[in-house]
Image 1 (tube, rainbow, N blue to C red):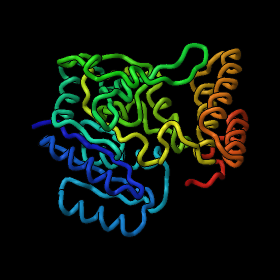
Image 2 (spheres, one colour; image 1 turned 30 degrees about the vertical axis):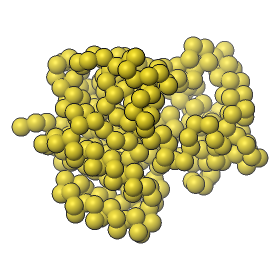
Image 3 (cartoon, rainbow, N blue to C red; image 1 turned 90 degrees about the vertical axis):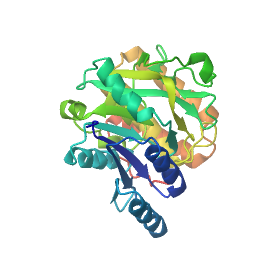
Length: 308
């Protein structure tokens, strides 16, 4: 029998995206698949649609959280359910993605053919933008000295990078959009740190692990359709706060960068976000509050800033 794969999708008022992702997963034809949809406080109409979707596909398990628990806590709920259902592999996947028909087969095969350490490996693949032609992410690595995560090969044509077969490319971190790992990984590393809520949680979970990317485009990403942030627009106060706080917590306390790199990180982060992403006073104040809370080691999930 094929290994059991449990895919975890987090939904928050994004039924159309979730439905498209589910259909792409079902169309893989993988014979031992469970799809766990964790709903993060959607409205009642959305819950009804998800309930009907679960009736249409018997391998769907719907788990309403009842409120917006954040990316990490919702994923942890899904991981626990996957383990309870004896999943051999767990795939954390954004609901604003769709997967190639052979995606699950190739991810499972890569573990076997490369004899990957199931206790310490997070596997992904080339992830493209929605057009399927340009790369969104092919691994995350820090910019030297600056210590800011950079997506490998971003915007490069897929056909210039992709390779046939199960060629694996290492990276410093996995990417939360698509993280595939064995149950032994959870037994070794535990669950995700729920204090992050969202942002930098994937770097935290994959720090020091064997992060590998199959050099084939197995996932397309309708970038940030769920959060509403598309990479060049304004940050909400909630997003600005979490980015500032979580980034400092990760690099200063988890990765423990040296003091001079902390100074560079602070200067670079403030410059980039005020120049590109923050367009109103509320977001600016939230960003600065996030820096202060991060420096103080205050890691309550949202710091009192209301999710939007």
